[in-house]
Length: 462
Image (cartoon, rainbow, N blue to C red; front, side, top):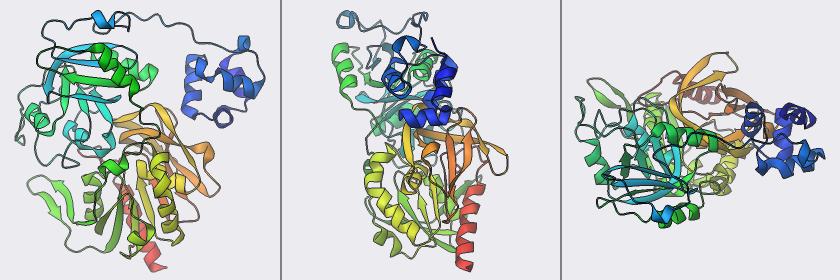
């Protein structure tokens, strides 16, 4: 039997192996870590190497200790809710997590992901990039600062539900205006508490983000077989264009700047540069940071054409964050971005905008097994050697092996080595995978907005 390292070397190294097999470098990294190749990759490995099945290092059967609040598909129809259970999370593989419901009494199907942020749950829940997802928070004290009308990234939450360990308590913060439970009810978002979030997070970490149904019912009556079928029938985020669901329906001007203690949000009254922002699911704080950097910001829909954008005579174009599969959104956005790039107007992208810029420059993207979601993600700036602690929320990434000549890697994740930033050597265009505008933080990467402004000023001076 060959080792994983033998096979990776036979394929030409990690990056070459990923390219030849049509998979992400993250998958190859996981092979090497586990010292085994999952069955789904066996046909491609055999075809690329000529090895026999017996030559492949196969994963050993898992022998984990059963989790008390989950079950297997066997006997699902006969399973009954334990006393006090008013909510259930049912995964597509039949795993069941019982808990207590809060927020709206509703049933939602989504991709189940986890977020490791210790602050900012209201910003997370209203981040449009979470469309199509239910969030498992690993930090236990969710709800302790209540909710308020300022700490939001969109008017209404787009996440389909939330999962927490502890009961949501009364708020204890001077800025709170509502209980989190009441805020969720008003927006139709269900929540479940009392489950083992560590077990669920470990499940996602080891097996990837599953489809699941969150159901909250005050009477505690659940059809688990039907809920599982609903989870299995949901197509998942790969191939799904969600930007059209969260984008603005018409263009508008943005002047609000960042928040300061005692003054709240400011207003940009004397902008120096004109920027058009393509809204694929833009967070408000990104627009605030652009305005605070001296930009007059005009926001246009995700489906805007190059003519729609250029008629504003922009000094720069910003590509926003957003949800879903970049390849799906790229079917209409890439042509627009390429047309803008051809004019020489400086371009800056964040998150989905980063992926779309990469696609426009000729690269490819792929889906990460579990994604990056949290406010504690280390990223290295390859130009300076500086390590930034960043806020992230993405399930897809740019495939570095597909980057064309003239496009350089500027940032890389220190968690898994995946791409976190690119820049064009020929065009005034750059992007990052993470969120430099993060509210409530970290703030290590705010310099990127100034870098965008400097590109604009250099272009104007030329």
